[in-house]
Image 1 (cartoon, one colour):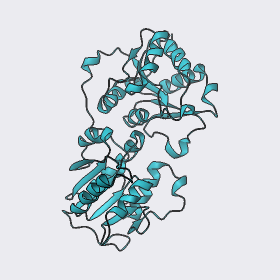
Image 2 (image 1 turned 90 degrees about the vertical axis):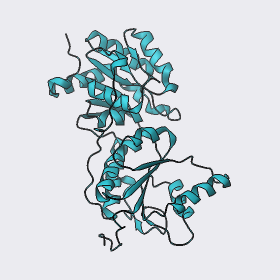
Image 3 (image 1 turned 180 degrees about the horizontal axis):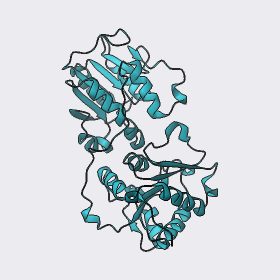
Image 4 (image 1 turned 45 degrees about the vertical axis):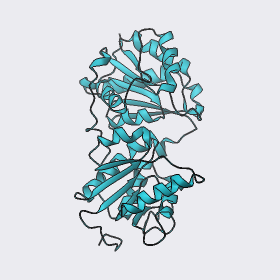
Length: 331
């Protein structure tokens, strides 16, 4: 029996972990995934995620199998019935819903009628509910730790990306270099520091001896091009990196500066000294990247955040960093 009086699954049972996205949320769920693997060392663990993250998570040590969820819409009856058949046929003994959304709650319903597996989450009627009325006021990492504690898993480690490896030889990187992450959700422009400020920052970094290296998704190539036009020695890798390569870049970089966006979670979790820029559109108390060396700069409007403020914080962090991780030195 666990702390709730619920019977534990058999050692070699099938366990389902649900985490669909987005990238930052995937990274912040890695500690809970590790805890679930540790708690069920002999179980067959299936991770249900979405296509952008499947190949990356297949390399992790946390699941024996990764399923890709096409997220069928409610009017897509063939898709829903196919998903329902797959979920029911697997005969999972327990489900850890780390997504805790309306969609994943719906999947709890899909697994009926009849006896459903033990379910840790917030779906109405689930056997292991996260019954903390303050859950929506908790940082994502703390909320998931609390959820697992209520499901009988008390030991949840910090997220680790030690398993994510990539060869950076093809990039022929300069030394030292600083990562810039100027992108973010296209539907939430207030989360982005103006691209003109990133271009000015790149110019300042070059003047201090560090080469800016811009990372982001294929849809953000215009941002990389804008920065490179202002600071031609900038390396623009937008649309040209896998998630594992971003992790490897973070290990090699002197520092990273970026918006509240998924790649910054990868970079911070890889323990790169990171400065994350927040406006009023998101709350760092609820979702800030976590890592050994993360600093938050927040303004009501990011338009008012100056390049000089970012540079000052960069050099303050440099003076406190170990030599192998020091950022560009001033003249």
